[in-house]
Figure 1 (cartoon, rainbow, N blue to C red):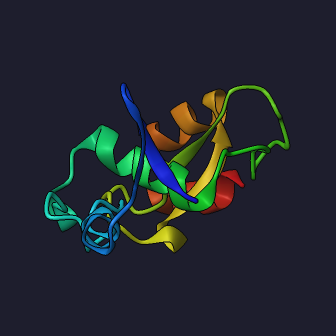
Figure 2 (cartoon, rainbow, N blue to C red):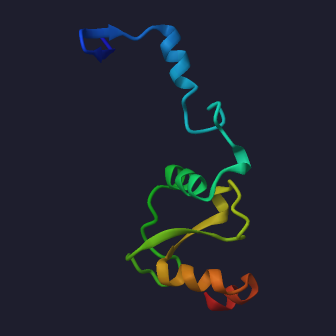
Length: 105
């Protein structure tokens, strides 16, 4: 039996509860979903949820302080618009234009 443990015992989850809990997801079904109006940190959390932890820098192959960087600097909810960079390469990438970055890689 699956249920919710309360102070006085275990209560069985009703079908209504299960339907309501499906609305509490992280994506578009959530009533608090902001779409492209998400905050900086909210977007990074969304990327981390969908892509996982950034493990290796795509430029220098470092495994220290690797983070997700936005390719277009437009902060879109597009998983292909993000790539893994270490802190040093991420800082350099944010300081130079995209045209120069192609030569940097």
